[in-house]
Amino acid sequence: MKLLVILCTLAVATAWPGMKAKKVKDEAYIGPACTVGAHNWHPESGACPNMEQPPAPGPSSNVTHVWPNQFVVDWKFYFVPDDADAPPYNPLPTTPYNMTTGKTYYYNNPATGERNMKEVYDEYCIPVFGNPVSSMGHTNKYSCDFLNVGATNISYVVLHKDKPKHAPDCCIIGKPFHAPPPDFATLMPTHWTQMVGDVSVDWNVLYDSGAGIFSYGFRTDEISVPFAFYMKGVPWIANWMWQAFENFKVETPSEDVWVIPDSCAAAVACPGW
Image (tube, rainbow, N blue to C red; front, side, top):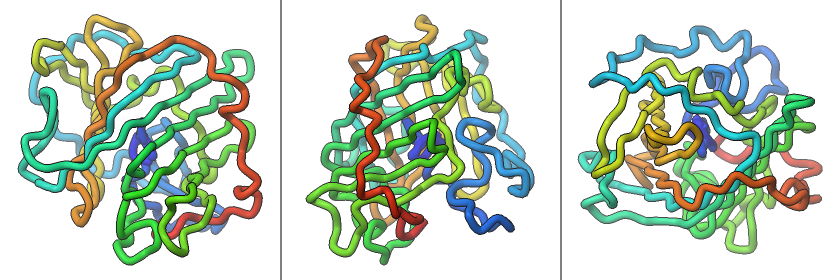
């Protein structure tokens, strides 16, 4: 999880999975300790953000972007090994890359505050498992789902038949962990507006001392429609990761999206996490 997976799993995002777990006294705690409130904020994590934020490279439109309480969106996620080939891309990286299609489902219950989110990676999993010799960290050529159901306060990674040898069927990447609130972009400390091709994009950005930049962009002329997310990756797979959104639909995901597989009943922290 980068915003993600900062999000993944940010991250996911999309995005916070790229932000490595930090040791805290609570041994039951799993995952990134600081996500500026998007997924959690562990009281013993120290300064959050953990570095002085660089100044924005340009002015911001000052538009406040907020997700709707429910949506489904398709995307293409690009994994770019060449560190010099940095985002944003218009429309594609200029150097070799791997790419996966995928989909995000989101639901925020305004009555209870519980939020559900699921990211489905069809061909390549987002490489956030930082150990290059672990079963899930040495490659990302396998499908995966990041599933966060609000009632559990746990973020699971669910693997499938194409999983790496010795990898679990299900593991935990965040505990406690909740899906981002609709207004997560307002929690990001830095904002600027940039033309990407013929599209004006409002970037909402966080810099982390260990994981680098997390940048989530909305179309300037749309309150709720995301454009792209990008972040640094692990150098043996991808130095840059770029998630380009498409087919954004304001609709409530079906209930079966949130079913937690039986394989997650005894899940522990993901290998390399």
